Amino acid sequence: MAEGVMLRLIKEAGLEDNYEIDSAGTAGYHTGELADSRMRAHASKRGYNLVHRSRKVKTEDFYDFDLIIGMDDNNISDLKRMSPSANEELKIRRMTDYATHHTIDHVPDPYYGGDSGFEFVIDLLEDACSGLLDELTNR
Image (cartoon, rainbow, N blue to C red; front, side, top):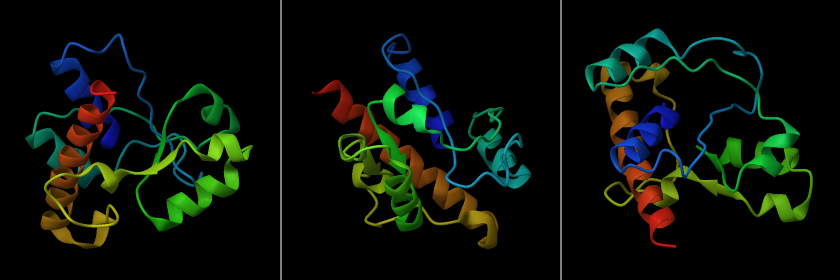
């Protein structure tokens, strides 16, 4: 979902040629699958078309991308273990560090929170991705 939000924001800002955005998980058990159908439905109501298929983070990602962003403590720990070097580990950030309207230290798992859980995650990701883009464009 974060990928869809970030892609929309950079497109709206006319910056799509300046950034490469991708999404990957730290576990591979959903590899090749679309996002959860409930997340796709909630995202669709806000104009997001989630067509990205899940893939697992690979070593090359640490070399190919300037930032590697995790959603929660487990993601951050997994990413640090997966990092090929201490230098590449410095690229790891937490998504909620970029939030400007929400005070929370992780993106919660929406899958057990009903409709409100999905809506909150989208709200949080819209906030954090907006903050991330602001930071990137003000460097």
